Length: 181
Ligand SMILES: *[C@@H]1O[C@H](CO)[C@@H](O)[C@H](O)[C@H]1NC(C)=O
Ligand SMILES: *[C@@H]1O[C@H](CO)[C@@H](O)[C@H](O)[C@H]1NC(C)=O
Picture 1: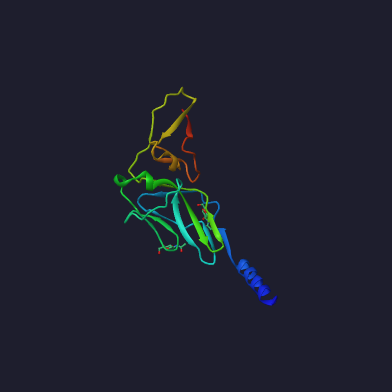
Picture 2: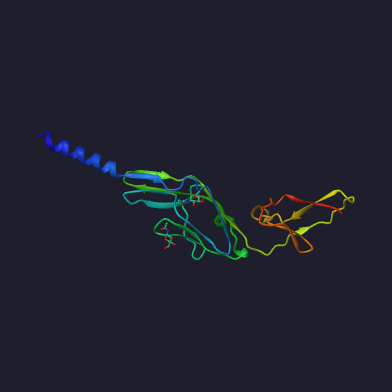
């Protein structure tokens, strides 16, 4: 009467060999998207056999569908739809989420993913007048509205429509030095 027991153990082992839960993209910690395009965020966790994927807010609240605003697809991809600036809601458009993957072999939780919308609003940059002695260097700073500063890169400076720096990226805080002739 020993044989049936051995068979049962072998079956359990082979199921365990095929069952797994794993992270697809452990480097996914932040998703920044434009309000005009929205975003699709795949769940960074997966497994075999097929997993049930669920999204939560970092507070532990399971998220619900908001028609036309936020949706979790059956394949576990979280979609945030494009929206006008007047519909910005920080609970949806600037919040920390995580996803879980669950199957008979267990359950794993992704790390937190900060999902943040950048509002696409018209903005202007400007340069303030500077005074410098003839022969000295005057430093000009590109002044960018703080609401968009983190997402703007100064790519060129022009003097009388002639480009001074082209192709080369200049940090947004970097000034342009000009020798006064
Ligand atoms: C993983 O996430 C990073 C950061 O968002 C992204 O750049 C990269 O394309 C992702 N890789 C995969 C395989 O999805
Ligand atoms: C999941 O489904 C959505 C909607 O059909 C699709 O846009 C998205 O590309 C899918 N993602 C993956 C990872 O298959």
